[in-house]
Image (cartoon, rainbow, N blue to C red; front, side, top):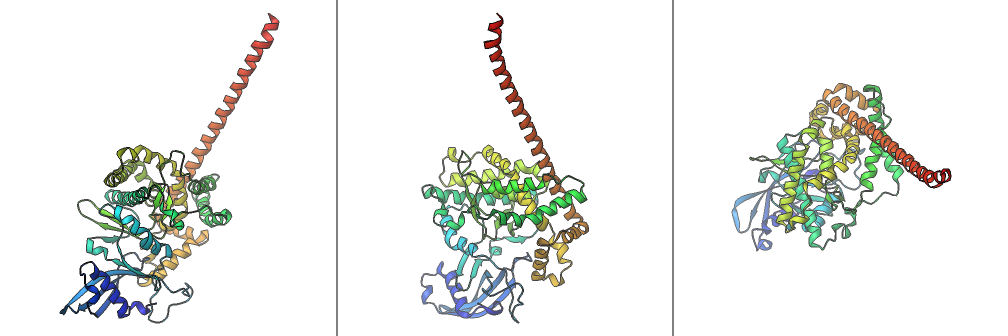
Length: 458
């Protein structure tokens, strides 16, 4: 492991050679002298401790001139690192990224790359070191991308995010297509989220958020919490049991983390978005990413008045990428089919919102005001404590932060309304079934009377 974020010269030389490989055919024969390395926090997101590394070096074919290489890197802490153990003196504790993110970049991304339509959907991985658990990325700023951490987005940025989802999923769709319809999860089983054998444990993990939503409904909004658990658990089972058949749109890779990812924007006449945090990629329904983003990061008014345009932006980009990849027009999903699947997954959207909005809706600004020197570790600990907190802690924040209170109230009322509407629909269906049953009984009785009683009277 690299102490204090300082890399040994042989590691830096590998990074430089990797960069020279694309422009210099005899790079292996060049001698490289590392002059300096400088490190700065590259991300504006206080929870994403990705760092910027500037390497100053000379090569033997041009020894008089110093050159610089500007990259980003993320280091995983050592196996014995623990949140309760303080870091060694002089050593920073960096963001923990999961093995699956490294697997995505090293195993899956090379398969997708030939089918990625410009302007892409993520920064490029330059090299990785599995033994050191280190990943080096291109610096997105070199392509004009800037990091923006916000709780809400403008309409143009929401459309840019939807288009990025479409580019990623089109690349995955095309990759499966050129493999003869054989999905990538056959080679990489971790991409397929299998049904858990211990559903009770997963449900116990949801109970804290469910009880918080129920408490807000009952104590703060004076609404019945009767159907809340049924709605949230219904969304969980909907995604878990989603069939990849029965005439539905084909399942494809899902980013899975659009609800909390750091999103990079390049703002020209029309914004372009890139995503970070690819450690939750799984096969899922085509529109599930869009559903998660819309329900978790967009308020209800945005969904009511802008959803049609969001789906239109998503579909147009998906269609462009698939046609560019050689998919016949008749095989491209229609906008109506995408909207139909989106509506079918509405219950899943409420499920994800109930699980994550109580934490993600807590503004970084509000927490940073309570945090000394914008300390990322302290901020992360605050968020983790709130996520695992008893209801009193979350309610305290709920009553102090007016914006948070409004977002939670909106979510709770929507879940309550959905539960009531679903209950009324079930009652109507039951009533209609009973009426049909009685009508069938009446018809059988009438036939019996006409065939048996009336002939006797005649």
